[in-house]
Length: 193
Ligand SMILES: Nc1nc2c(ncn2[C@@H]2O[C@H](COP(=O)(O)OP(=O)(O)OP(=O)(O)O)[C@@H](O)[C@H]2O)c(=O)[nH]1
Ligand SMILES: [Mg+2]
Image (cartoon, rainbow, N blue to C red; front, side):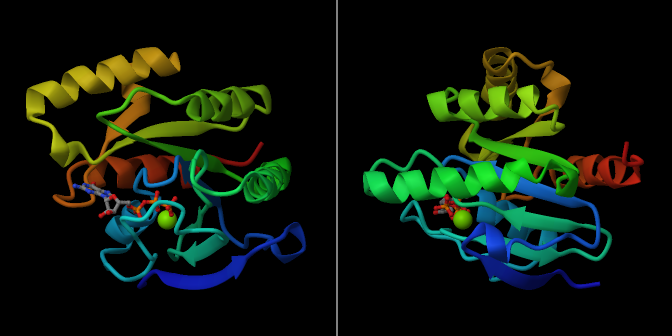
């Protein structure tokens, strides 16, 4: 089936109870979350992307047939007001508080950049709450093959993960798409505990 937008949620009261295994897509603002969703959908306009960071301010739900994806507001965007940041932080906390609704989390991080404090905090949070996650190193087209491999290793190390837990993906060339789909197949086949 073609991936479909379901709805947006701005507050906890609007969060959906997923009908299928749900994977949450999170990461810094501008890390490529919406682009990744479009890559998986095979359709450019499904999730709105923007070169201006902080574009996605709501939780956007998408139905991919076998599974749901939730596009989360990016964290760590410096130019938004403090009160707005706090509001997002609370929304994210509430979202991840509903653990039973989240099968897996994709944490996106630009392959060229070292993990930010926010990224590390996110991973610590997921580890603490025992929510399974995979790191997706985005924008892999920005680096040569050699450099990319090296960066994936460095990123994995910085995140305290094995290199097999970091998948390099490009929304531009589609690199890593197959690997991501096999990861998703594995995730949705896993029985809920
Ligand atoms: N070259 C390249 N550019 C990318 C890739 N993924 C995203 N971008 C660009 O990075 C910018 C941000 O992408 P988005 O997908 O909107 O990022 P986001 O994480 O959804 O951002 P927010 O919603 O603001 O948090 C856009 O200009 C994209 O075109 C990629 O794989 N390769
Ligand atoms: Mg976005």
